[in-house]
Length: 233
Image 1 (cartoon, rainbow, N blue to C red):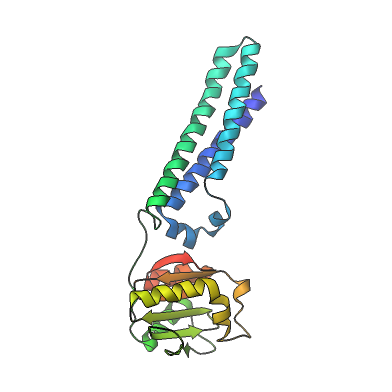
Image 2: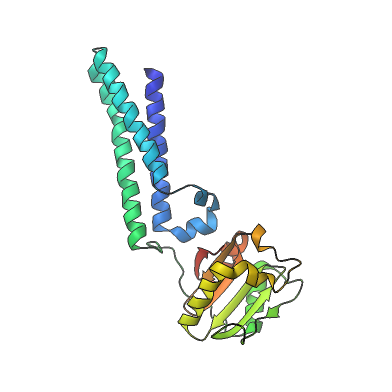
């Protein structure tokens, strides 16, 4: 009985931890994406539900066994604590879902606008100051190739690109294109060293600009140029 109670308490603790992670990802998704990549491997909400459900099942089982042994009160009251914790975890997880549904960007911690660097030379200098020297040299994006582009630069050794657009609509369209065709588009600039399938990329963006960089360097770049961080591919 004592070991079963320990299992129940452990399940309740796991449910509470999972609920806390759900809430953190809901209120500040940018921080999680940039600094806590491992959390993205944990499915949201249902993990909390699984642990909470198992806790409640154990609690019910312990209560039934205690009643049959005519020792009800003390055992069932202690077991009830685990059940209450599981219910609280479910409530926190449900609240997290509501927050994420109504505030996809989170409640705080998101830098929405900063960048416009306004010139390719400035962009190269700023990005190099954040990520290091572009050893193979910067390549400028052709304005005729991308609709609404003001200017853009790509560095294959840093696996990073930056672009500014004439309108918010053009920036949004480019971001959508990057989510679907990003690996193919970026490979065009250096097929020998750019290996997008082997790397996960984040997008940093504002109203009329977007930067693309590996997730390992997105925190460094975000601290310099700002922007909202999201996983691209």
